Length: 473
Image (tube, rainbow, N blue to C red):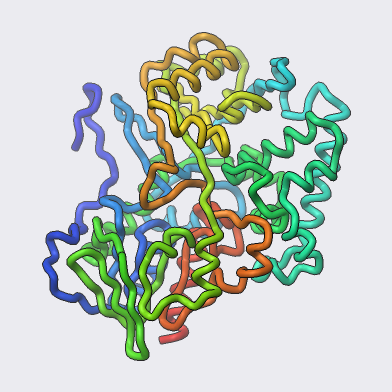
């Protein structure tokens, strides 16, 4: 129990788990070793344990949850500083959460949004209001994207009929060719930036189309109610992982950064500091770029090694401002802001279900995150709070507490929201993304074929990898 701000709160934490330094130098044996205790790795481990296998899970961090991370404000309010939302058709994360007693509630989505475009600010029910030309141009572009996305095979995007042409261009080049209306171009750029935390010039059009198809279309990706931002977890998103780890008990080892993986015809050996696990097979539940930092013996084949050199992570800073109350609601505002300029392009009401305290979450993504990531934290907060005040009034610039997370600074994440494919990667290296290499299997949301890049995709990838191992064994 922690005393926070005069209240007693009971956060969900892993009560078991040992650090590597406490295990000594002896080698542990298991049927399967899982590298990574995020949703993908823990989902895989749970299924394998349920099938009667002996499993060891090695996690580099001193916590579980991967790119989900829940913190507490001074009064005990939960804040998800990593992944947080779930929506319709995200069936696997919903089922997993329910199985460990983690519940959800609808995101607040009532009132007018604040729109900032071309230096003007106004209130509107939707982001396309007040500009008929913009509405026509953007809706035509979204329709074109969805129609093209439906042609991308989810299990093999590189086999799409137009894969070579789509993978040879960036999302930015497609936007420039699609419309000459600059406000529409900027809104399309914002939809890419807000989904991937990157700039449209960096990402392959084929990757964008694959991602949209995996999520069920652009409308589902950008929507709050009925979309990817539909609901949140009462206990915090990280609670799913902490409760899974609690079930797995001493099978989960924290502070175990895997540096070397060896395999031969008999099995695998995974080394993490002073500890090693010998197993029949391994699941590496890591983003491709982090999997590429591990030394493999024998070395990875070139087609796999070069893939991991080419899948960088997105860049995002998530800053949450806490107020005594959600004052914007009494003004008829939803708390949602969409801006075509500044460091903060998207803001949401992130208050708890009770409505107290009030919380606004601001996202700084892509180039803006890289620029502000270099700043001193105090200077960075001054910039973000200044924009909150400009968008939602002076009170928004005077929170009682601020909590931020710079994901590029996370050594064992490398960024967020997920790894993305620049031009040419899908058609040259796509076959290497999920293909096992000997006794090594790959998981992580980047390897999912449904809801790729989301928590649901992470769970699905772990379940798929576990099924591969069971079939192989």
